[in-house]
Image 1 (cartoon, rainbow, N blue to C red):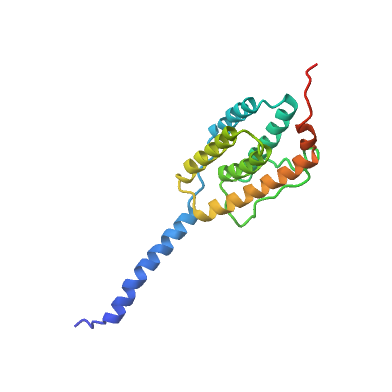
Image 2 (tube, helix red, strand yellow):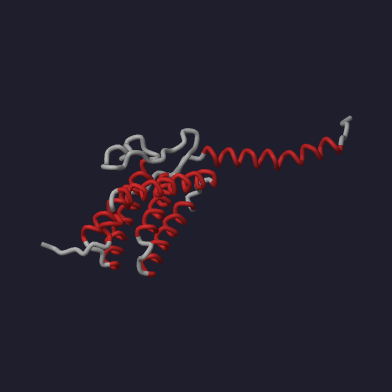
Length: 190
C-alpha cells in the first residue's frame, strides 16, 4: 500500500517550477552569441556619409568624425574577436581603451552600437534635429534587431556598459587629438 504524504507531494510540486526556471536561466546563459553580420558595418558607413552631407561638414572635420566613429565601431566589434587587435597604442594619442572583463560575455554588435552612439551623440551634439533623430533611429533599429536574436539580459547590460566606456574613452582621445579646435576652423580648398 502506498503511503500518501500530501505535504511531500506538495513540496515536490513547488520545486518543479523553480527547477524549470533554473534550467531555462542556465540555458540562456550558455546560448552562443550570434555572429556579427557584415552588413552592420556597411550600414553605418552609408549613414556616416549621409550625416556628413546633411550637416555640411568640411572635409577636415568630416575625416575626423569618420575616424573617431570608425574606431568606436571597430573596437566594439573587436571585443569578441581575437583576430581583431585593439587600436590602443597603435594610433597617435590613443594609449589605452577599456577591455572586456574575461569572466563576462559580450555581444560585439551591442558593444559597437553603444560605443558608436556615445561617440556620435557627442560629436553631433550641435547637429540638426533631423541628424540626431536619424542617429537615434538607426541605433535603436539595429539594437532592436540584434536583441530579437535572443541576447541574454546580462550580456546586453555588460555589452552596453563596455560600449559606453569605450565611447567615453574615444571621446577623451578626440578631445586630446584637437577635434574641438579644428571643428570651427574655416576650410578653404586649395
